[in-house]
Image (cartoon, rainbow, N blue to C red; front, side):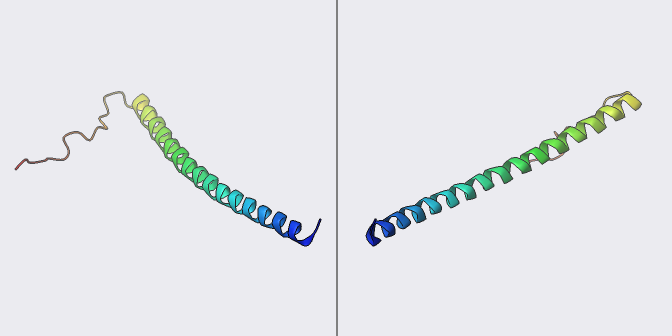
Length: 75
């Protein structure tokens, strides 16, 4: 193996390294996005558990809808 072959090999490895670094950056972004969504779902589940517990303690209808709370006017 001569100097030219070694330099060519080192360049190939450098290019491969850059590809893997970019791939890891993208994977980290996907992981972060999934973590945020999981936390949001966990919050929703906790909210549902609280509502269910409150309904068991105080039977009745609980309205959590937001329909009708904002009024839009057409011009």
